[in-house]
Amino acid sequence: DAGVIQSPRHEVTEMGQEVTLRCKPISGHNSLFWYRQTMMRGLELLIYFNNNVPIDDSGMPEDRFSAKMPNASFSTLKIQPSEPRDSAVYFCASSSRDWSYEQYFGPGTRLTVT
Amino acid sequence: AQSVTQLGSHVSVSEGALVLLRCNYSSSVPPYLFWYVQYPNQGLQLLLKYTTGATLVKGINGFEAEFKKSETSFHLTKPSAHMSDAAEYFCAVTDTGGFKTIFGAGTRLFVKA
Image 1 (spheres, rainbow over the protein chains, first blue to last red):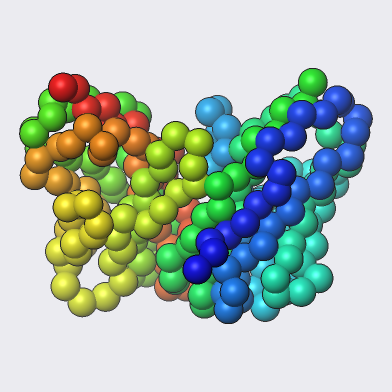
Image 2: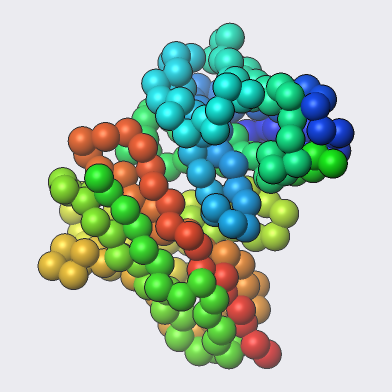
């Protein structure tokens, strides 16, 4: 079975540009999580969807970040405009039920904003 | 609110030696506890989890962890380290009253030949 799929795997962009990260969760999973990982701050939860509905977005850093889940098989995380401090690895994870179940992580998108 | 503390950002062991990675948590209600492993340039993958029942939990690759409520600990152990165990390990906690999983800062395990 295919795991969580993220694209692109690497993204290099200039400050001020819009960046869109994509995620396809495991089929049948109804919870989806977006995380950001940096050396300084570790692994941070950005937003959590359950049944395509955003449940908690309190981890989204600021209004420049937005996330959508239009259907059960696709989610996007958008940064507009991007800044150098957004450079990080962004992970998408899905779960078969909710937070009480293990999460399956994608390979991540390494974002570099110059 | 729950929290997770992993003691030691880096741990170094010799191949064949005992691996012990420490995790302490705080939670106002019975927690669900997880250990994840992250290899370079990969996402996290589950090693083991505790939800209810037996407090000694066995996971993949010979790892196990014991939930000790009195000590609020969930330490990860492996009797004999292998070079392939070199990775970063994350302890995580979710309490039954909430929905967020909180991850610890991670412990990087080095295995010396």
